[in-house]
Image (cartoon, rainbow, N blue to C red; front, side, top):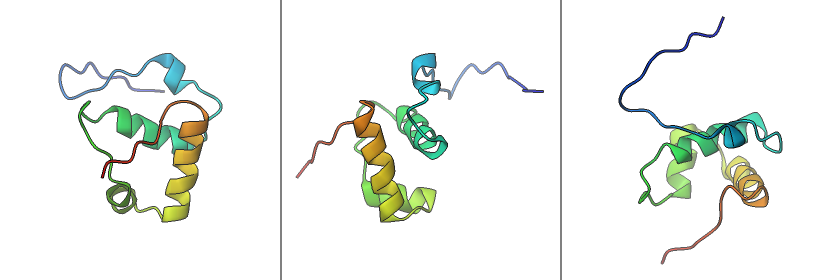
Length: 79
């Protein structure tokens, strides 16, 4: 049984189109859903994500390649 709770604050709404995208693996979905939960003005720090999620550079690169390839992310370097 799936338990769904009524939440009134501290939540994110994600369109079914994102959640049901079969082009993405489960870990790719997980990181995408996490990123979508962050504030709009959030600047992604790749090293920080690796530390937070306890993943290596190769896995992080693979996930971001998949997100870019599927159109859910784009790369923009800020210097």
